[in-house]
Length: 418
Image 1 (tube, rainbow, N blue to C red):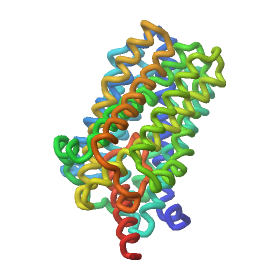
Image 2: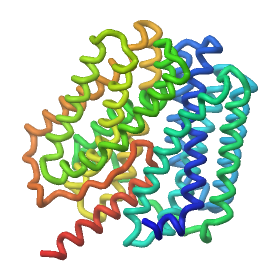
Image 3: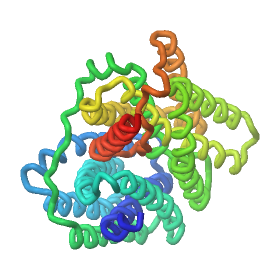
């Protein structure tokens, strides 16, 4: 771990600052939108634009990098992010915000691809797993820390928007001034969805539905908080609790997944999450209950994404895993695009609790489909399954592929012992 931090600390610092900016903008827009009088439906369109842009950016980033190189792509897209954050404050208009959210989503996807390429290139086979773990911790730490900073100024003013713009601008320096020469960019072409579905129906359907859950969690949490009437401090604590849960249960659930039928674990997690959220909806209104529900959805969503990838890998050859991971990222992105709009409309019509109702429905659908799949195919023995490698839902194909490389290396090591 010390070797990783010594050689890549500047890259991690830059990514931490980028995640500060990204974490602050989601919360800040949700709060500022309510101040500006935007309805949950309007905010849902604004928030959904990020996921549309992110999906497009994930597809276009490799093309742009191939044409002009890593450095130029990173500098151009990071500059666009910084400018967009200022425009949010200058022009609080739904159409302008939607366009800026699209630009920010597109740009962040490209920035992540560039930074993750550098990270992967700087790591060796022996340190790649540790590098991925540190990267995940940095991502979550940035988002959680952002929730604290949101409380330092009035969200109705200009200061917080200026802060996130400055933070993103500063993030360029440690990354661009300290990284090694630009790596040779490579990413595997995604597997066709038809072949992927034939190989792992649960992996595809689960990723599609989970993409919707994640987009609600990442895009609509602050909107939910304002609709419920929470203060800025309460909203930031609520969002921070979600992401803390997403990290804390990665390894315990990963440990279980390597020792039992992963389909059963997927069904159990989604069903238990739905049950806890449903009980929470019927309890008396309490901020403590809201925090428990937030922690529950975060603790379920983070590990579940990794579980679906691991389950899909169980039915693939080593050479197909990277291709499949890229396809699953795409499927999750498709599921993320329209869900916030449905939730925003429901919140406008039926109230703030539609936020959790939508998550309950999506998680129950995953549980139901997982149960159905268990009747259609025999489960693999634990000895024949791939290792679980933690991957966060907001990943790009680069990190997904790195995770598969780590899983393959672990599998080869296990096989060589026998």
